Every structure is written in structure tokens, then in C-alpha cells.
Length: 312
Image (cartoon, rainbow, N blue to C red; front, side):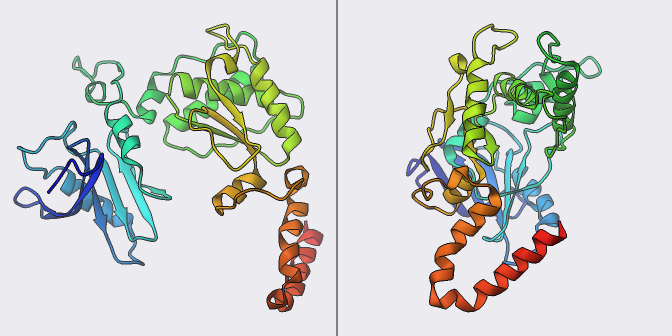
């Protein structure tokens, strides 16, 4: 077993302590054990598998090097679906992920500085003695400063952070036109990066002109505690090609370009980002309509599209 073969190494069928069985894969990063993978057949429901990986995480032999025990990074996967549990979180829970994290990402998480949390019954909070995850850092955010913000903006940012702290990562901010949604969003992004150490934030728009406007807002935004412009502190990239800047902390792009990148395309058709989503859908279907192999289905697609439009 050569743990120096790469920065990240997965060891198959690894024997654990007595009573803990064999881990399907034991994950090493930088020569130290950091997590496990439990592999299941395609179609297996992963909901009940988390407990199995928790058992593995606690069974690492004592003589093996590990920066955190029990092992913090737990994966359950069928090869089609993958679930992940980060035991560095205050309230660890399994959640779906698109793929396994890179070794560099796990290394950054495992070497993160701990944060101070209030003592519990006169003793240090155990979370204060472990690397701080993003969700742990959420517990330490200072209150939202009210200076320079409208009441609705302050309330929106505060409530968003409450939702994230409560392990409810999906949230919707609804504000009237002209109420300052973009400024509220930038305020939240600034706090997530500065206090939460968010590695990158996606700012998604449906037309390119809105992306240009958003970039101007970031360039004009004065941070409330530092006094400098947002773009003087953090790199903000507005995508004009399907290439991501690795040092960008905020990436502004259209839904159309994001979809193109997820499909692995080299770039978008000219002018595609200035179209509304309905027009973009028509543009992407146009080559298919010209293809003889799609002639039989294109009419049915148009009929479905028409009936959907009339119903809304």
C-alpha cells in the first residue's frame, strides 16, 4: 500500500477494528485517513446507509494516522447516486452530492482553523476543538450592520443566515421591485465569504445585460466594516466564455451559459445570453428540428410547448 502514490488515495476493503468490519474504501489525504466510502448496488436506497459509514469512521485502528477521530468525511454511493456526511458540521446530516470531493478540498477542510464557541456547562464546546466547517462558522457570524441598509434588506440577510444556521440551505428572498435585492444579495455574499470562508459563490441571472448590471453593483459596493470596495477585496468574474477563473470568489453568469458548461460544451451560440429562457430553448432546439432523426418528435415538442404557454 503506497500512500504516497498521490495526494489522495483510496484503499479498497480496508480492515478496521474488531466489530467494525471492512470499509469498502478508506480515504487518505496527505498520508492521513480522513474518510470512508460505502459502496452499494445501483438502486439501493442510501438513506439507511449513513449509520454503516458512521460505524466504519469510528473503527480506524489506533496506530493509523488521522487528524480527526472519528473520521469526518463519510460517503455512501451506488455509482449513480452519492450521499455525503460531514461530521465536522454542528448537526451532521447526509446530503446528495454530484460527485466525490477532490483531495485538495478535503485537505482544505481538514486543516481549517477551529473557531471559538461559547462554553457548554463550563467546558469547551467540542466543535471549538475541531476544524471548523462552513456550517460551524455560521454559528459565529456577527450581527448584520444596519448602517447603509434598508430595514427590509437587513431583515432579509438576517433571515437567510438563520435559515442556513438551522440546516435549511434552500431559501428564497422575495422583495418588491426597487427594494434593493441586489445589494441585499451582495451583503449576504460578502458575509458568507468573509465570516464563513465560502470558497466561491455563484450569482445567476437569466440575461447577460443583468449580469453586466450585477458586476457594476459589486464594483460599487462598499463593505460596511472594511470601507473598501467589494472588488478590491475579492475577485469577481462575469463569465464571457465557458472557462472558470480558479481564483474568483464570485462568478456571475447566465442560466444559459451555466447549462452549456454543465453539458460540457466549448461555448454558447452568439447572442444566446441575451435571449429569454423561452427563446433560448427554441434556439437550442433549432438544429434538432432540421435533423431527419428528430422530425417525428419536434412537432410533439412544439405542441407541448404551446399547451404549456397557454396554461400559464
